[in-house]
Image (cartoon, rainbow, N blue to C red; front, top):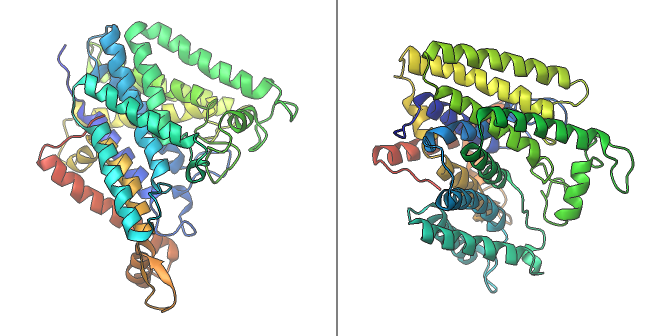
Length: 423
């Protein structure tokens, strides 16, 4: 089979990455419209769809990236290296603000951090042969993990999990499953993973706490993170991580559901029949997810089994609509904006996280208070954005949209120059 791209899938990926960029970069975290915030705990907002959508899309893309199913050591090595490159990109993001170099501070230290950043990006995104990629990724991973557990004060609390880290892990297991199993087996694995996770979370007592529960600080997943990731979890939670160990199990199920849809899209049948099957599947698993919500609430932080089914069903519905519009109705004039976002996702993931960190580090004199400094991000937002808006939520959203426009221009330049960066 010839490897080919599915335009509707690129569009879906591009829309998801764009939405991610907008929700991750408000002008002020204190002024955000509710749909652009995560649910406090149980429930699901549009923002809570971004991460599972991307994992679903990644799974869907696997049969297109590997149209010929086979497994041998070179295939395993390729999958492993790609997974580790994604993992390391995410891990380095957590290190960026903690990098120290002798006694440097301010701009000199920032320049050192940026130099290291571009070196790491080149090592993890560069187009080398597989042997060089393997050496580089294991070198980067080894250095980062040694620093994290070296006892050096600057790195003692660096976060190990993260969004890209989870994506890398899910890609690894989903890709291996694709190369070695049938669709029937993959469906069975999804069922087992979701039921297993439900059983662990709902039935297994939590050591040192008591009965199984789904509360923030006392559930089994939180306890496991506090044991295995002590000191290396998300700063906001301190004792557990929303991308921790146990909740990665159902995240793999999200990837496999995408994988099943990707294989459906490759079946030799009428495109309208494919859409019909996708819609029926989506409706069915959304209903199951909503029903399961009564006993195992839809919850992003826990990545609950009901959350997997609900968000995967919505992802299938979205892809069904795009597939019909783009692939069947052949209406593609509007798609270019999303395509330029969709074909370079890792560049956006990585550097859209680096740029805000850089803007928050560089400080200049505050025009209103001569004795104080203000970082570039707040300077631009406070003195160029907020004066134009009465509602602070509109100002915050305007900043996020301008950041998305900046990335659209950058990605358009890459697209026109046929520059695609892959892990």
